[in-house]
Length: 407
Figure (tube, rainbow, N blue to C red):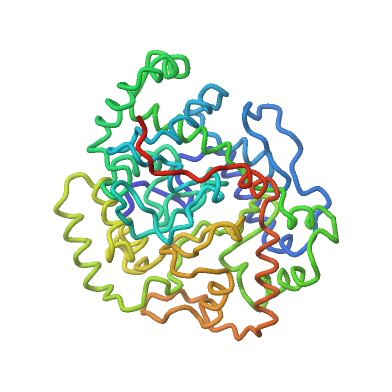
């Protein structure tokens, strides 16, 4: 069973305000998903923290509601988080930062099929974009973290990623970097440098990474010529024959093209003995006292990684199930799926068109689509309209991250 209680897929620690927003989304339903909107962005919110710029297409009231009470945003905290996010000294051999796998030059992800950590070690999962990650109900492909704060702690100590021995070692490393002490004092006062304040700062920076202002957003705001005729046909297919909207949900109050749920679509199924993998994972989980560290290792280990959500819930129905990713900026974040197994958008469309990969746990909504080549092309054109002009422009001004050791 998941160690973090949830209700209706939403962590119980979320505020009543967020639950009210979600309730509104449910009440509105998917009818609005096919109706162009004249006022797509919510009006400015008076208490929107400095440092957050809300783009067209993202409701400002939802942004404000997603900022946790115990980690308020300030410009100083955001800047501290930015420095930590790009600091390779937080890894064991000083070659990998958060930005190594979440590179601003590649839409806050990586072009590698799977993340590559210290000493060029390959993990078993693709790095999802950080853009709009503040809206995720659960973090990681398998949902093993309930917040950005908790998520940011994992890669620091995962032996395949940043490789620090433990969180105490992370704190010691940060304390050894003289310029950080006064900055942590200015932001966190007497609390100083702890693993929690490190995580809070990184999470604060990540919450400023919002993606909107795509051609699709302008189309839904009333600009009929913002997207092509082909893309409009693709939008119709998305909501109809192609069945994409079933999992990649969109509506004005949750415009992120995901239902935030976990599905087995067959990506991990080929040539896998899930029964044996599940038995091995349960044995390891039951024999280790540090559950969090063990989960992080199993999640990125070849083989057990493919169990997906099962590692957290230990429920057979979750074997091979992974979180529905956002489709925003999908054109910029190839390769695709949790293991980077499909190189292009057309490859991904073809995978769904054939009905995924058969396996005993295949999601009931996955079935053969029988799309024509022209329909597939229209669907790809629509997906390209989800690319943020702001994100694309920012990428052009960024130099790719390197693995040169930090001094």
